[in-house]
Image 1 (cartoon, protein in one colour):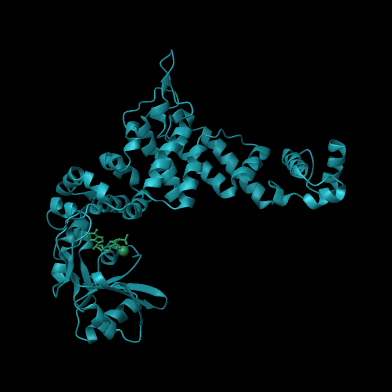
Image 2 (image 1 turned 180 degrees about the vertical axis):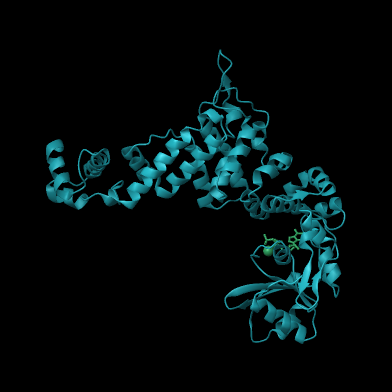
Amino acid sequence: MEISIPKEALCLLKQLNDQGWEAYLVGGCVRDCVLGLTPDDWDITTSALPHQIKSALSGMRILDTGLKHGTVTAILDGKAFEITTYRRDGVYLDHRRPEQVSFTHSLKEDLARRDFTMNAMAYHPTYGIVDVFGGLDDLSHKTIRCVGIPAKRLQEDALRILRALRFASKLGFSIESTTAHAILKYKELLSVIAAERLQNELKKLLCGPYCATVFREFSGICFELFPEISPMLECQQNHPYHIYSVWEHTLHALEAIEPQLLLRLAMLFHDSGKPFTKTTDENGIDHFRGHAQHSVRVANNILHRLKFDRHTHEQTLKLIQYHDLPLTPTLPWVKRQLNRFGPETFLQLLSIHRADILAQHPSLKHRLAIVEQCRGLMEQILEQQQCFSLRHLAVNGHDLLSYGIPAGKQIGQILHQLLEAVIHGSCSNTKEDLLQYLCDHFQ
Ligand code: ATP
Ligand code: MG
């Protein structure tokens, strides 16, 4: 099988080979090429030690990105290529990292330390694919399988549990049964993994097209990471709007929403407060009043624990807080929301509404039309640059001062009232009309 390799990577392999070193492309790039996908990055593994790599590539820009682990990064035409010395990992004492790594001359040993068979293949343009652990066979059967004994490999580095799930979520592969058993058996070891590493894999897991399927099959892993949301699993919703439990509804909503991190995070947690607010009325109908606020609290804990950046954290909470904001498809209402949330967040809220509806009782599908109406109105407002915020208003504070309104709080209040008059349609957005409106209403 021939793989088309970027010329920069070919050049690196050739330079290393010319100095007598073995050098191969390895890991994710080989897997993705076999699958016909475009790799994110091209990693190289070589028999050369870091100083030997540097001398073979002298004249190129080389960064010491992980010398201890044998990794340097070559920058060619602005693209980064990681080059790592063949390595075997020492003993793992803490389920996270090997105590020490040692370099080796054996490509096979380097491949043996890798996580899954599909990630443990190397490629050289002359020798083709090196596949010692049956990666090609597993790829063709869409199977994720640990290299070696799963129980041992997952205990060495528990992050591999989450990596297996994220590859399943991205590729739609199934996890081979011994590997799957070990994943469930050793799930508690996830607690020793640093938040940053968890977060990194979790983001990719959440944004995969098969995320909901993976969470359904491995809900135990999801609840291991987020015990706060486990009550959703048993929380039934006896309500005419619903046909699913809260957890099953969440999975359907995750499936329906676009694969963007903020949307997926908000969807995963949007109803997590429901189990804490459930009441049942005299007719046996369940209600979840104020659940959005509880969901915000649950998500806040989790996002904090996983050390999400401030923007992701705050934005996710905002989407959860307003996920059930009642929609009114009129121009003034949409303008008020654009003023309140900004176009980007309002659009995200509409996406959340849409996914939420798609995961409810089919008889509610007609509500999708309301979401689309709001989206259409928003597009119209933005396209026609209609006024929805003080920034667009044809008068500002200075105009009011010149008009004779005394400086102070009142200026702001009047500006907001003028904006509301424009949004409402009772005054057009020209300086002349606004000052006339002011004269008529505020004297
Ligand atoms: P992606 O395309 O998402 O980057 P990838 O397979 O390249 O996927 P990386 O995290 O970039 O994933 O890792 C590169 C390679 O390093 C993997 O293909 C695998 O061979 C190896 N690897 C990474 N993390 C681990 C780990 N925790 N345990 C064992 N091998 C690992
Ligand atoms: Mg990679």
